Amino acid sequence: MSSAKVDSTKQLATSSLVLGYAVCSSFLAVINKFAITTFNYPGLLTALQYLTSALAVWFFGKLGFLRHDPFTYETAKKFLPAAIVFYLAIFTNTNLLRHANVETFIVFRSLTPLLVAIADSVFRKQPIPSKLTSLSLFVILGGAVGYVATDSAFTLTAYSWAFAYLVTITLEMVYIKHIVTNVGLNTWDLVLYNNSLSLMMAPLFWILTGEYSEVFASLRSKAGNWIQLDAICAVSLSCVFGLAISFFGFAARKAISATAFTVTGVVNKFLTVVINVLIWDKHASPFGLLCLLFTLAGGVLYQQSVSRPAAAPVPKPTNSENDGDEERQLVKQNSGDEEK
Image (tube, rainbow, N blue to C red; front, side, top):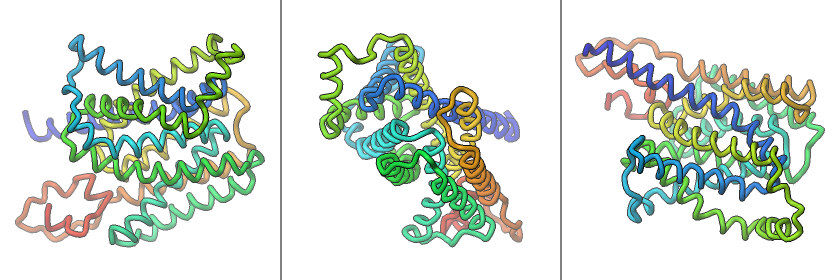
């Protein structure tokens, strides 16, 4: 097979994974908001998602439809820090959706490139972003500030969860990329370990948040909506999409850089906004939506600024075929030019 055909096949596979992640991510925010509205137990909801994903991998592995390695203590111990970070990101995400609308979630999700850029410059001693990149980050920030200033649904509880989510999702975007590229597991292994370990952590957070008492009280009084059709459908749908985004999320992380993955998550929220506005009235005011679109436009500008190819260097007798590698285009390592 020719090199061009191999590259084309690889690019198609990568594009398919990114598209799958974008679709799942776009729908899941709205689905989770619907689920948490009809089934107001965020800890239990996420535990059911983890259980569904872990059991699905184990079950389909037994049937031979997919391949994964046996679950071992040593590998679990290596992956545990990543699972903790992931759990915290999902935990804060679900509680944010419980107390705020989808647009508030998207605004804070859109701020992650700004924090990643600052962290890269301060802690990893990366070059200061270019003028265009800096402009795009200020556009994102301006849209977010405008949204927050006009948010009629502002509450201290909601925005406390929003800031907690912003911190954890930023850490998750960078750290999980490091883990998936170094731990030596295939995509289904990552899904199995991540969801199994997250499921084991769930009882601890039920106790810390006191949600277990709400669940038991609801069961005793039979006041909970455990068997209502809308709650069952919403929870089931969120579990299915939870499995799908676990697979596409890990596969996309392995295929593209952390920066590209972060920006993909921002840009695909355009579809989330459209879906959310069309299906119900649990959304922001018109001006809030305008600020949100302004923020997302900054995300698109950011994507363009970090993916623009650098000026062509003077040809050197070295391995320059790798100059198009996306990781180097998006996250410029200090020694990247020499290593390539």
